[in-house]
Each structure stands twice: as C-alpha cells, then as structure tokens.
Length: 302
Image 1 (cartoon, rainbow, N blue to C red):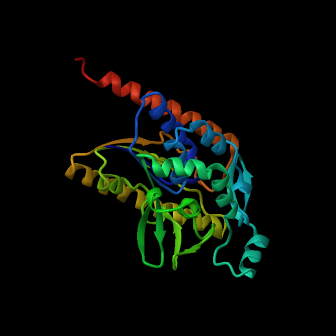
Image 2 (tube, rainbow, N blue to C red):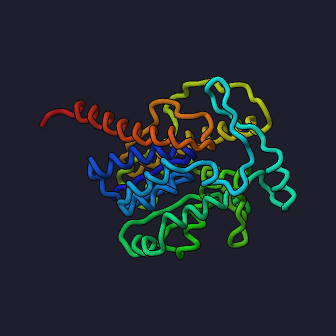
Image 3 (tube, helix red, strand yellow):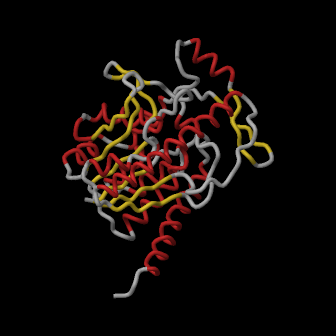
C-alpha cells in the first residue's frame, strides 16, 4: 500500500504540487492513501482525482484576497524582502465583531468549494482511495484525522478549510462542539498516521529544508514576532513528526522516501505571491526529476 504525505507550509504548497506531479505523471506512482496537513490538505483531493492541472492553476493564481475575508496584515517590501506589518484597522474591526483571531479566512472556504465540486467529491468518496486531512482539536488537546469516507461534501470541505486555518491569523472554527485550528499545530508531517493506516511505502513531501540554512532577521513588529515564534514551534513539531515517522517505519517494515525543499523558498508562508508560487511549482517538478535521476544512477545494474 503506497501513501503520499504532504506537510503543511502555506504558499510553499506550490512546490509540493510540482513534486507530486512528477511522481504521479512521470513515475506513475499510484497512491492508495493521500494524507495532508494544512496546504497539503488542499492538494490531495485534486491529486487523487488526477486533476493536477486544475490544482496547479489554483496554486499559481491565488493571492491574499483569495484566502482572507479580512486580512490582518499588510505586506511591506524593503530591499527586495517581503515582511508583514499589522493592518491595525482590519484587526480592530475583527475584534469589534467579537472575533478571537486577528483575521478571517472565509474566502478560502469558498475557494475550496469552488474548486472541488460535489460530483468530484462523490467520485472520491465512492472510490478505492482514501483522502485524509489533519486538524487540531484545541478543546480536547488532540490531533484528529478526517477521512473523506466519513463525511458529506459540506463537512469535508470544512475539514479541509480547518486544516489550513493558521490561527491566530486565520479563522478559529467551532465544529461538533469543539474549537479547531490548523492541523500543523499538532502534526505537520503525518507519516505515522499513514503507516498506522497500512502504508508500506510512503512518499513524504516536506516543505522545509532538511538542514536549517538561515538565521531569521530581527522582528520588526508584534506580527513578525508572532510568525517567527510559530515558525519555530512548527519547525520543532515537524522534526519530531519525522523522527517518530522513521521510528514507526522501522518497526513496521515500511519505506519512506523524503522530498525536502532543496533551498529556503520563503521565510513567511502567509504571503501568497503568484509569480513566486508559479516558479516554486516548476522547481518542485524539476527537483523531483533530478532527485529520481540521481537515485536511478546509484542503483546497481542487474
């Protein structure tokens, strides 16, 4: 049983899309299980449908307005580097409405519903493949994995959306009596879950470099400090997930094929830049191609 696991990573999901495109279209990898966290959850339904071009068009055309119904920050470009600053008016407006987060991401939910049709959902649900998204249950302090087999169209679209909600910058969702947020807060790389569900070979796309290559610039404001803190915590979670995944794989005779980003794509994955994301998709495709050519060259001749 082969599984595709895609980690969280915001706008860097474009790179994962390129890697997955090569694995599926050029290497003809046929996956029985797709598991995604955050941006990974946005990709997997379309990949399972073999509609790579459709999701590529989405990832290479979105911007801040596609994601946020109320964006809590402004993008500041200085010396060619994009940083975020507080949009004080939007944040105050959100608090005035009684929200518990700085911003809202209801536009993302609409985007999900506009790109996954009820007909496509039924094809996936009735098919042999399993599609699973990761969410964090803040009320019960647990990570939960939501399979398409267990829900209707509206509910599953909401679970995908919830998996992507990078609180406190995006929406906090109350569902089934609990508060839910981004799956990455608990499981950035759900390799362990893939193996527990029966996977014997896992292709894991990690939207982070294998080795840390940079030092973060000093924080300019409260938001940049918060994003740096969250990035630090998510990086620790991600590395822990990978260690646990390797341990579980060793104990279950499973194989993991890792695809890390070869370079630092961005230091702020909340910035959705169409030009960069288009480039990242192509970079992901070329990276997977190069990596597999190198692996083939290392294999001994029969």
